[in-house]
Structure formats: C-alpha cells, structure tokens
Image 1 (cartoon, one colour):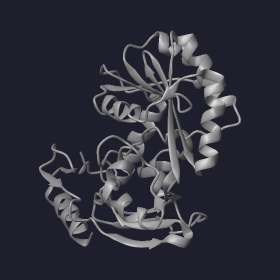
Image 2: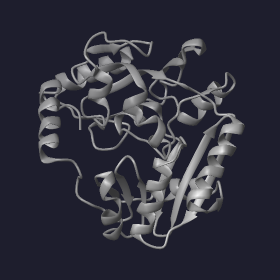
Image 3: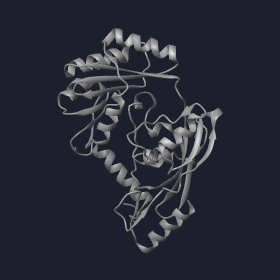
Image 4: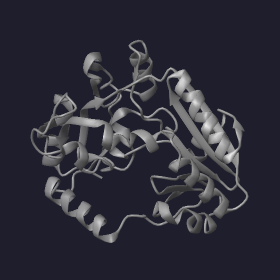
Length: 299
C-alpha cells in the first residue's frame, strides 16, 4: 500500500496519468500483489482483505469456517474490482451488491494520501463512508487497498427452480407470485426470453419446503445449471437497462435477450446501451472526482 501511495504521489508530481488494473494511463497500477486475507473474525462474520484477493480464493478459505462472501458476479474478479465496479450476480436479490457488504475501506487517493473509513464490525459509524463513495467509482477516485467485509453463513442446501414463461406478462405474473409467497429466495431472475429462475438456500428442510411452495404456485422443474447460463450471459452483456420493478412486463416487452434481476430493477442486455444513470447522478460523480483528484491523475 505504501508503494502505491509513493507511485501515485510521484505520478502526480510528474504530471503523469495513472489507470488502475486496466490500460489507459501512462502508468498502470496493479493490485495483483495485494492478495492477503489480513483478518477473519469468524464469530463476528467479518473479514479484512487486501483488494487483490480473488473472490473464489476468498470463498474457498471462508468455506472452511462455514462462511462466505455473498457476492456472485461472473468470473473470478478481485474484491477491489467488485467494489470499484459495484459487481453483483443473482444473489443480489437477497444480499445486495458490494456496496451492501462493505463495512470499511482503506484507499490511496490520487495525490498519495492514505485514507480509511468504517471499521471491522457491522455496526460502525466512524468517519465518512468512503466504502459507499468508492463503490462504482471504477478506479477514478483512488486505489482501493483494503476492504472490511460482512460475511454470511454458508447455506446447508441450495435448490433451483426454473419456470417456463410464455410472454412478458406471464413472466411478471409468475415472478410476482414468487415474491409475494411465504418464501425467501436468494435469487429471482428472468432469463429473457423464456424462463424464470429462482434460487432457494438455507437449511435443507426449509429449502425443500420453499421449493414445494413455489412449485405449487408457478410450476417448473429443478435445474441448477441455469445459474451458469445466467453468469455467462451477464459476462457477455453489452450494457445495463434500469427499470422500476413494478414495470417488469413493459420492460421485458422492449428487450431482446437479457438477464433480468427482477427485484433490483436491472437488466443485463446483449447490446451496448447508453449510461443508464440519471444525468444528475453523473454530474455529481464528476464533481466528487474533481474534488478528490483535482489534477486529473486517475483515468
């Protein structure tokens, strides 16, 4: 981390541009060697890791303690990339995105300043919430060096229900039936066109009961491979479309092939689309970047 601070301070002094973990700068800064798990408090369900730790490697280590980081984006990104790009997968329905699972960060700003906020317990309100500020920053506010994470118990069982849907209105009706039922799915996706996919996780008996309730409402059959397909399609997507969950049917009617996170109001679509953020949100992000990196070091 100190090396990164010195590199950024030096680049700022020389007027060089720096990109983090991607091409584009005069200097490309990598987090590959920041790959340690610094602390794991199993009793508190928290961990502190360096930003270059790969998600799969971290979860393999946590599994030995019956725990997991409940992020499931496609591929095997680093924890820093999960936060910088606000990555998530089907489990977003239950656990949220990286923004919801980060409880503290240590970052290196464009001028080499090292700053920290948050802590290593879930209920912590110390300082500014840099974790949320840096979430989705795409490396343009600074280098994410360390991350304190909220963990969850590893589920005993998982079962997946795949339900054919004949139209946008049919998909919306069946998704609504599942969401209103007395069940707690970990994921509710529409693989458009054609299927609604629902994931149940937890204790074996509870999972069995929830699957039975869902099948009684919407039919379908079990097929866990649907999540591999969802991940592949999300990884190959060209962009995102945001929508109000209540308008699911209307949104599906206007889409081609897509992976749709029903409750999150996000559709990963095959074609490239304009930035889905509100112009005011984009303008705010640009003002924050100007405050934290007035010299424009980071690209």
